[in-house]
Image (cartoon, rainbow, N blue to C red):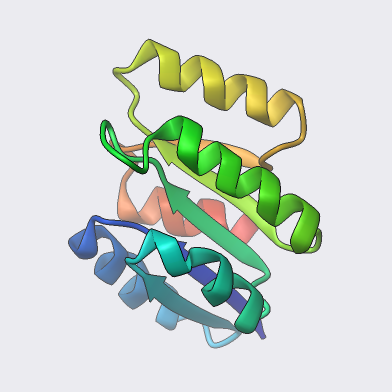
Length: 125
């Protein structure tokens, strides 16, 4: 059974993903809206995959989320990391591309991704 932790502020997206993924009997999705506890949720649940949503602005922007992903990569090397970032912010997109190239994250998706696409992406990781 795979555990997927969703570190997100967008509760409707997280709920839609969880409903979509619960149809897969081999998955356990966990929603963690508190970024300050994301590392604990990922480590304590022995997550196989983590989706980390970067805020468009504010405390948990792309740079902060990439720092979290770097730390998670060291502390939980078996956990696949998927970053969700704003597609209209060229800086965030460039940071996500560089992070993937450097191995900081496994992949990234944009905010405008559909629930089905996100679920398929997570299932394929």
